[in-house]
Image (cartoon, rainbow, N blue to C red; front, side, top):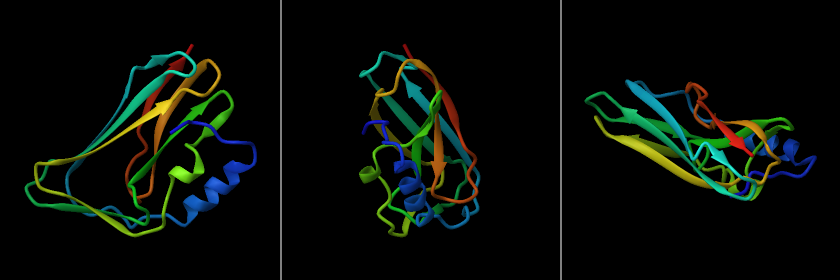
Length: 141
């Protein structure tokens, strides 16, 4: 995926996300972790984003998304917020993500730094209500 979007497509992406709102967070003791590696890249280099949702409880927890994925990854920087290409997004299907007790769900995505040099923040844009936004810095030099 590339973090790039043409002017005017931000509205299209926002509208497509509006149809992908998830159900409220299911009960359960969850911890969330977002990692970006490497944190410093050159333009056109790749970086990897890992999102780990860990169920610390003994019973299973199910997260329900109104989309085929639990979260988008977006980039906030000097030019504003940028989402991955729209065709990489939501397919508007209700999807349960079951996480067994003492287990975790990990999403790994690789991106190309297609933005100009600057200080950015990679963040989670959840398609499941009730989860906090996670943020990690990314420098494109």
